[in-house]
Length: 242
Ligand code: F6R
Image (cartoon, rainbow, N blue to C red; front, side):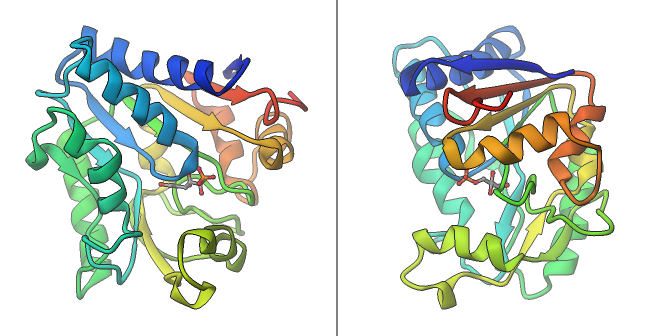
């Protein structure tokens, strides 16, 4: 069973999440980090930036690999995941930009970009820590629910529900890309440790289903039940049914 930690409030959520990442970097400065974007990790990244400014943590020798990126958005688009990472973390700490990796969603050949990302991950070796959020439909990365899941990095057509959930960041739903490049389930589960961050009442049902329901491709987050070292950090609202 995953180790479930319930934070009392947002500050504690961010402290605990950032503390887990900072401890890893303190014991292993060359750690390979798998990173996620979105509202779940944003406060944790903010706290990590504070810890860096206080001199408690350094990313100088770390490497990062992001889970996913929209297809068709240039890297400098305000809603690209590359831009999110640059603005929320990479530009604010001492990580070497060359050691930060995000799938190349703007590539003219996304399939090729996905294959290259798989190779990159294979060359890197096992990630020490993979940060995840969960979608309302149970996706991790952009591995959407369905009859089958993919092991390695691939191009995916986003569920309508995912596009709607993410439309809040765009001026209209029509602007939300229809496809993404995402790390696959095998790559995610290959990480030595996984930290799943879940916030808000709207996630209570899906996280309960993922952790207590059957392991099924129809709820990709349920596959985390098969991993031996998962920490699930929830706030009071998201943890209501756990
Ligand atoms: C983001 C990602 C997604 C999000 C999920 C939850 O890189 O891979 O799986 O983690 O959609 O998003 P938020 O945190 O915005 O609710």
